Amino acid sequence: MILYNASSSYYSMIARYALFEAELPFENRLMDIHLRKEQLSSWYLAINPKMTVPSLVNGKEILIDSQDILKYIATLKGPQWLDSDKEAGLQVQQIVYAHYNITIERLTFAKALISLPPLRLIVPHMLQKIIRKLEKELRASENKEALSAKIALNTQRLAFFTEGDLRDKLEFEKKSIQLFLDKLPSPHEFLVGNQLSSADIVTVVLLGRLQMIGEYELVQSAELIAWFNRMQARPAYKKADIWTHFQPWRILFKC
Image (cartoon, rainbow, N blue to C red; front, side, top):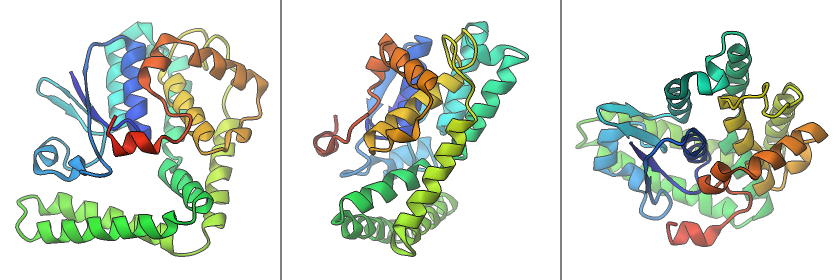
């Protein structure tokens, strides 16, 4: 298996962490999505028409969304993960579904742009540059649908970062996080019962992101904090490179 991913990418962290917890062998193919923008290259477009990371390639099977990758890994693990349990598996699915309704990108960038005012100029400029590049490529592209979708996505991102009050938007995203956290079960050995599941994977990465952006105080449950501390001590967590603080030098040097 080959995992195309970026070290700083939230959804890449989910895929990496799931693979390491599952103890499945894979090639960790790191991509430069910030400077070289490898995700926009023609060779990667052939793998993932959405031009996003992560993507998992296993022979002829190609998965281009972290949620699908997570489900695929859970299926490979079968009864070793709680996802396969008839009753508890439903609760796991509900947690995973609720997690993917959170707009992590908006939370992360809204906090970053508020905390670092120069980014309010840099990020829109970068998005405008990407949009122009994609529009230029669109004319001669054989995959106009994929490029048009990517242009539309980046146009939406640009509007989010430049229109309206960012502080109001950040508060809205924080409320959605708080709602998710408030609905989580009180953890046992793992988040749901005494067996690892996809719910552990997504919630660990979410709490890591809250630490990174300085919003960990949203986590108010002592049981959840204790569970997170236990999960951080596991070998898979350490291997998965889950960012709990911003590391701009690693973005510059693609590592």
